[in-house]
Length: 146
Image 1 (cartoon, rainbow, N blue to C red):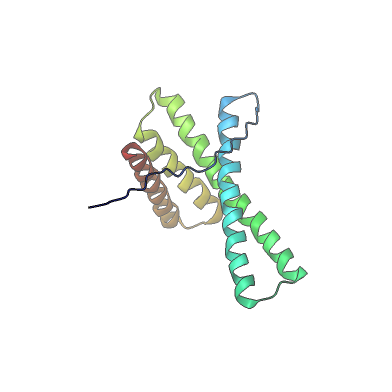
Image 2 (spheres, rainbow, N blue to C red):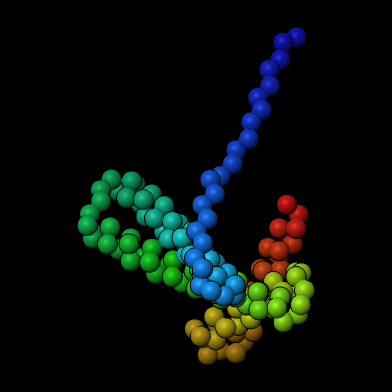
């Protein structure tokens, strides 16, 4: 009985930009800002491209709105990522060890800090801190699995 097999691999291109700020902490923070900010901006671009194709037309006004939205989302998510990476690295330096607890503390501090900057409600700050810690810890555990 004849049979055939297909084997192959798929890999994504790796783009790495190194900006030396003269300090490892700053290098990590800027790297996190740029990577996640780019992802957020690309998400906005893809979403708006879908709606342009769905409507069937594009205008200068739509293009300007998309560009503004890309900058806003990129800066927002880039800032959150930069703060988180900085907090996690700071935890690693303070504790002197590299483990999942750094992610938990870094995520909790980031969630609390971002929430406190946007909210005055203490309960919301606490829940955002818990959420940030939980998400960061879960992401770290998932990275251990792969």
